[in-house]
Image 1 (cartoon, one colour):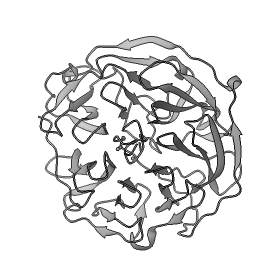
Image 2 (cartoon, one colour):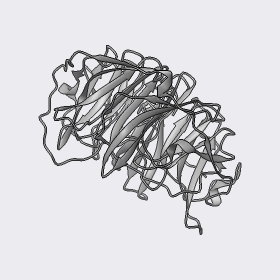
Image 3 (cartoon, rainbow, N blue to C red):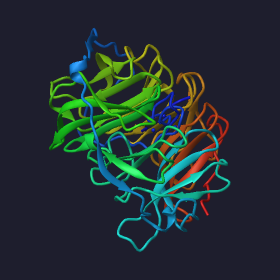
Image 4 (cartoon, rainbow, N blue to C red):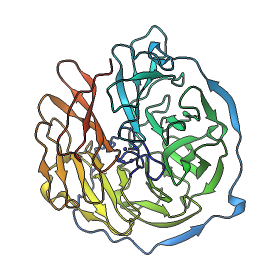
Amino acid sequence: MKNDKLVLGAVLLATSGLLAACGGGGAGGRTAARTSTSGAPATSSTVTPAPSTTTTTTAASRRSTTTRPTTTTTASSPAASAGGPVAKGFAPVSFTAVSADEYWLLGTAPCTDPVCTSIVRTTDGGAHFSAVPAPRVPLGSGGLSGQQDANGIGTLRFADALDGYAFGTGGDQFWDTHDGGSTWSAPGFMSGRSLLGFGTGAGYALALVGSCQSGTCSSVALERSPVHAESWSSLAVPLPSGVSGVASMTVHGSDLWVSATTGAAQANQVLVMSTSSGSSFTTGQSPCFSGLGGTLSATSAQVVWAVCPTGMLAEVLRSTDGGRTWTGLGANTGEMSNGAVLAAASDSTAVLAPGGATQLLRTTDGGSTWSPVAGTGSGSLGWSWAGFTTPTTGAALRTSSAPAAGEQLWRTTDGGASWSGPVSFG
């Protein structure tokens, strides 16, 4: 997805884990839109939702939860000994940052164990990397929206140097650390539930969860805890039973947005919004079509960017009033696949990967115009994720066909105008 100023999916405390701004001020994890063969008419016009309603939670809607006594301090691969060297062949699937110089990657490295999930960290902008212990669970493919990791973890978020989260959407794999990754625990609130979305902001960790079967969910709630503690409470979310297990969530400070398909027969997803870290919500209309997924990326309390699949293709939209209305930005982007990736650096600047082996596109005027980014097209099968830690510093995961297939980390320090890579972890 996966804060602003980190969509970098993570993640400074003031922003979300989804920018493709990398989740709030920090970098978020890799995101991908779900591919669907069902058709829905694409549109680039302004969407004006129906009148909003407000739901306020009360003390009765909250419940304290305890922590499962499950922790792990065991290295899951040769790359996972704290402070040790990075195993040769490390391949990333998720990126998260708390500053331009300090960031982590979740991935895998060759090992003799059944589980080879690994985490690496740098504090000097990538000049040197060291290994960090990882939860001893399988590695998923990554992503907060669309791609689900029901049986493993595919996304990594750190809110600061000590407090981090590793999880997969669509299942109950959710782990957190409060000592920089030396140990990981699995909070008890996930028992019998699935994770639909996650973000950090205003000092809170926010997990959207539900009881899900056969792709639909009931009893959707927002679990909230201070990032530095294991003190989770449940907040009511105005989403009915029958919500799709594929949802998009973005957080910026105390503001958060959730877009989800409901069981109601309506063209667009429901958009629920909060300006109080989930204590109360308003309900409106999402720019994304029901049943087709999508991603949201907030860069301020007022500006939210969106990538919405339309069937076989996708479109980019932007809101400047906190999600109440949306304007299409596709006049100069050309056709985009359902796997299009957007990384928003600020309210006006963003980078777009339309899908396939194409050049990145960049806008500096809020999406009115887009220009190709030189040197970002050749030798690539596509960009699977991108996000910004600051308005100038960002990262992207690129699938390369040569010299060796796999994900590569690329970096920018000029707001996406140019990119360098691949970054070496050895």
